[in-house]
Amino acid sequence: MTRAVDRTQELAAFLRTRRERLDPDEFGLPARRQARRTPGLRREEVAELAGVSIDYIVRLEQARGLRPSAEVVEALAGALRLSPGERAYLYGLAQQQPRSADKPVAVAAEPLAQLIADLSPLPAMLLNHRYDILAWNREMTRLLVDFETLPPAQRNAMWLCLRHPELQTFYTDRETVVRQGIAHLRAAWATHPDDAELSDLIAEFLAQDEEFARWWAERDVAINGRGLKVLRHPEAGELTVRFEVLAPLENPDQRVLIYRAAGDESRTALTRLFAG
Image (cartoon, rainbow, N blue to C red; front, top):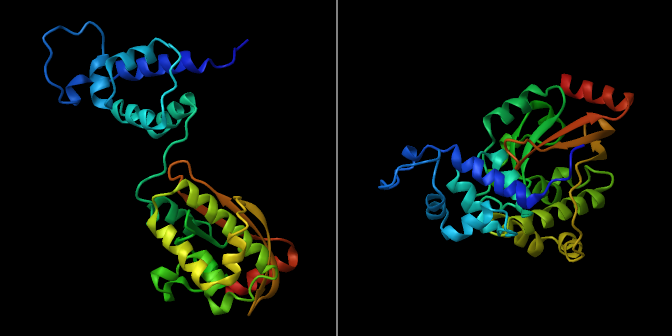
C-alpha cells in the first residue's frame, strides 16, 4: 500500500536528485581543488547559485523540517534549472504558490493561435488573464464583432461588453455576464499585483462605468469556466451557446474560450450565420 506523501522527506530527496543530475561544467563555476566524489553540483554551489546559506541547503536535503518561502523556492528552481513541471512540483512540496510572471503575456502562443483556427466551425478565441483577446477565428468574429477593425486597446472582452455600442444589448442577461467578468478580473488583479496594464484597465472602468464601479465594490471573486449564455444576434436572432474555458498546461496565463450551440435551433442559427 502506498503511504501518504511525506512532504519534508520528498522535498529533500527531490532537491538531492535534481542537484546530482546537473553538469558542473555547464554553470561556469570556479574550479575547486578537491575532486568531486559524487555527480552533479555540490551543496555549496547550489547555495551560491540560489543565494542562500550552505547550512540551509544541508538542512533541506536532510529533511530537518524547513519550509522554504516562495522566494526561496523560486531561487532553488532557477539554481537547479527545473523544468516548468518540476518547478510546479517543488512549489507543491513546499506548500507555496508560484509568483505570477512579472511581464504578463500579451501575445498569443503560436500553437494556441493555430488551435483557435483549427477549432472552426466552433467559435473560439484566446484570452489572457486581463481578458485581452490575443487570437480568434472567423466564426467568433461573425458571432461577436470583427476584432481586426478595432484598435488593439479595445480588443478586450470586458471592454467590449461594457463599452462597445453593438454589444450593449447583445446578452439577454448582461448583468450576470458583467458580474462574472468583474469577479474574474478581481481574482486576476490579486494574483498579478505587478500588472500595471490590468490596474490601469480596472481604474478606467471604475472611473467611466457606474455599473462596473458598483459591482466591483461588492468584491465578488470567482473564475467561471463553463456555462450558458443567451445572445441576441442582429442577424441570427436569439440563440443560446455553451461556453467552455480551457487552460493550457504549457501556457497557463492564456485561456481558450470555445462556444457551442445549446440545442438544435441555436445550432441551425449558427450554421446559417457562419455560411454567410
